[in-house]
Length: 462
Ligand code: FAD
Image 1 (cartoon, helix red, strand yellow):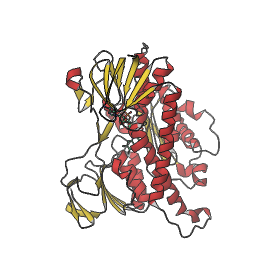
Image 2 (spheres, helix red, strand yellow; image 1 turned 60 degrees about the horizontal axis):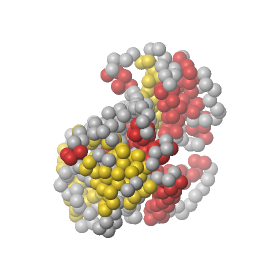
Image 3 (tube, helix red, strand yellow; image 1 turned 135 degrees about the horizontal axis):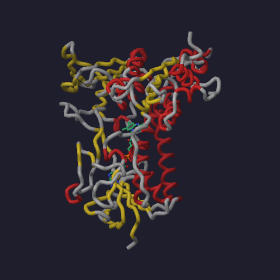
Image 4 (cartoon, helix red, strand yellow; image 1 turned 90 degrees about the vertical axis):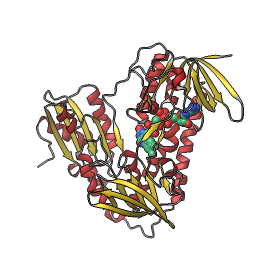
């Protein structure tokens, strides 16, 4: 029987990237996937939601076409077609990953993998058959699934998680989103852009925790204008069905009330999936449902690595991929470690939000003396030409000028953030960014202006 250098369990952005890197380093790789390649990210996460975000953006813009001197009449949307386009994008990308695996000579086995001893993966192939795979190293990349909080009524028809919401062909005209985190707010923004009445219920005092507090605060007026009601410090007591409608019973400072809707989206976090992984037999350490690993992504059991959502922490596709690269390199005998200091966090709401490094609140909590500079998109020529002037670039540097945090609310925040991620990664100062010539007219000039603010004053500010 052929013995592989590496067996990867799970074909999400953690697993398939680990397989690619291992193959690049000359290792003989097998990857086991029980469903479609691309995992949550391609099939039920990043990509499908962003396809919907684009349709929602176009719809919003078409409805404001008169601002651009255009007249568009008789506008309508067909949600099944919106979903069909999303499915097409997903299918193209999934097919691309399949091709990539083939071209890199990575063996892909379809089936549920079981791991109960290092170096031996048992695959339940479709049907009754089982396949035994031997490998020097195993990388567990089994991902995560939506949590379903124990709210009475959570199993009623019409109560969905992001998984089902992305399969739904019918547009929900009234939605209650339980959980104002990233996934909840992205869906809320998509639904509200298409004209749904959206109520977001968040337990904490504010939506989008872990983001510089100023950005969600600045975004909330736009969210409300789009038709969202945001109820914070609130809990959902029960969900009831009444004929065709759902009633969500919630309690906040004002008391108990019912919100009528057509769909309830449960977006109260995700939990690692460890199906098929025999934690006890392997003697793996688990904390809060996630596998415990060190910076080399080693589990402590020789030859067994774990990466991505399965290890908890920052549950993002690019983090899973970065961890996959580190694990693969260590399988190849290199000495790689993961560094989580600079991880861009992008939220694809309207307006968009992105951040990297520390927030102003974290700087204060750490007792750091920092300088903060902001530049609004209202002062940026390109933002005005594209009709997207909501938001601001906020930069944070230490006393020595070194950039430690960057937070953007506004157009293309998720693209703009990478210049700042690189700056923080490389220990650059506000002066380094300000003295780099930025092309005109671009949104990036807002970054340069905010950097000027760190060493003096933005130029285009009264
Ligand atoms: P997954 O992508 O979950 O892949 C795990 C794979 O393992 C799955 O394909 C599964 O079928 C397979 N598997 C599990 N167990 C077994 C087994 N025993 N045998 C065989 N196969 C198995 N992140 C971002 O960075 N940007 C975004 O914009 C973003 N948007 C998101 C939107 C939504 C709605 C959701 C739900 C998530 C989003 N995420 C986003 C998070 C991102 O999708 C995950 O962090 C990422 O997919 C994790 O990658 P992974 O490889 O660890 O796991």
